[in-house]
Length: 196
Image 1 (tube, rainbow, N blue to C red):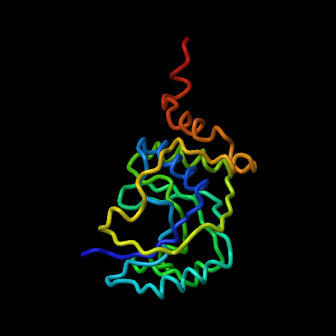
Image 2: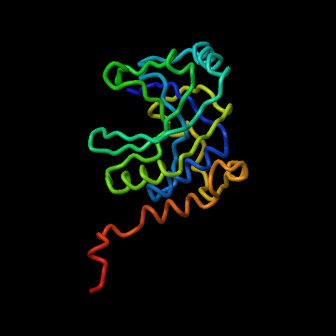
Image 3: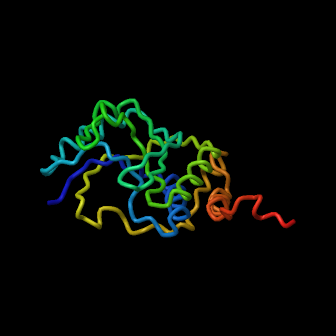
């Protein structure tokens, strides 16, 4: 049976290009999922349009702030994420599979989810050093059905740029190239690489 969720989908093309670029470097493949925060669900029924519009209106009064890097492990998979802040999110948050009293309140955008602990470690360290702080008013609340593969647009070309973020000094232009180097550096200890 299909599960239904409400997503807070980020629609800012600059942030989408940056995050899908980070995902592509970390996973080695183009991301097909949108840049979103799961804010409610799963539901076992259709979500009324009026309810979706109400949540969207509640959130539109303030921008989203993407700042901070975190990590957790679930079922042997390592998840590295960017924290998302908004003063209205806590009021509409409902995730029965991850109750706040047990898992905390943790709105985030996933940067990496996979079984490679080395990639997760390196990505987490790199992104923490970058200290990104991104603010956007470009978002919307959308419904998602877990068995619909066409919810998001087709995969984005990771060569798309985020020049406005670069021009505003929020992101260094070479972030993806530096991330690629950080993830591919040899894991052989320095002592073992020295020639005696």
